[in-house]
Length: 169
Image 1: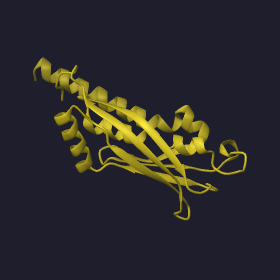
Image 2 (image 1 turned 90 degrees about the horizontal axis):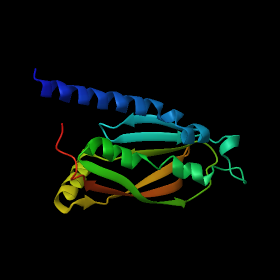
Image 3 (image 1 turned 90 degrees about the vertical axis):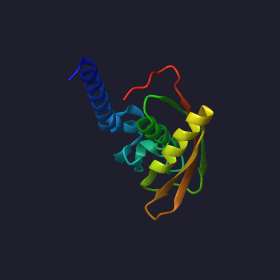
């Protein structure tokens, strides 16, 4: 095995360990821990994340329902994270904007699912490679235990090629 191959293997292992650590500790990230947000499913390879938020005394608003900031926070980073993990280091990915539309009060536990299919990821990659950038829009629905939509969160994500990085594995 050459020194270059060893270097690539070490970089791959460091990235894998970093990802594992970040995704195992995300439930302890202060904004999530403090709000009571829990990541229940995190499968970046499949492009799927599921989160839930229980209603507690510390995340209720004045009228006793889910605090809107917590509802938005539970939806904030996941489309961006899925794209970062699946597109790799040759792309810069940022959340560009977000809009939350409240549909009904959240009176109990609410859940949201974020999914970007491999086909969508490939289309985003191709658009960014061809045009220099892509700006896909995703919509996540926050639902309650009865399957009713409590809120819809629309995310605009900015993706562009990182021309400063050399091609790496």
